[in-house]
Image 1 (cartoon, rainbow, N blue to C red):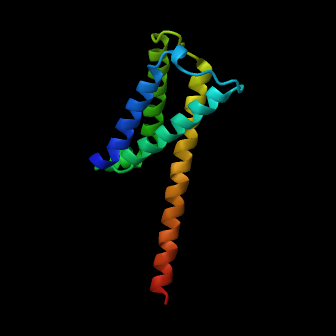
Image 2 (tube, one colour):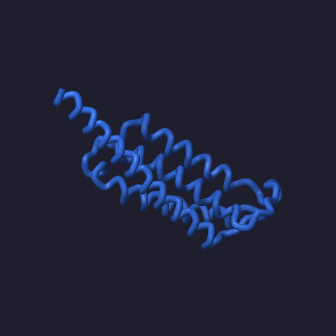
Image 3 (tube, rainbow, N blue to C red):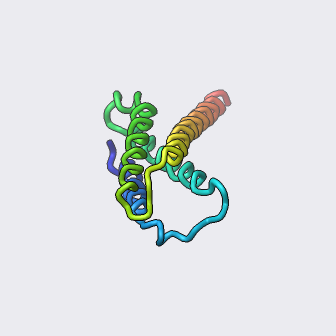
Length: 134
């Protein structure tokens, strides 16, 4: 993998770990029902984007061709490890509901990444066709 594409995923992994290490008593309570699930969803949607950026820019064709699956597995494994990690943080706990929001975020992030790439590829093809047919 090209290092410049790996750095966002590595830094974001560290950010998730750091935020998961904060004790619950240090986090101001939010009184909106389900707000934490929305945060989990967005957090892992963004994580999926960084993973796809890294894997889809690998030097290995095999990794590039399987970037969606590799990103999905990597993201889910990291989400599971994050929930296990939270079990050991005072005032935090493991939650299947948080994990579910994480996995949904990962899945939607991967779909969004693919749609963006698809749109950009189609735009480049249209631009190329317009240039060559003038």
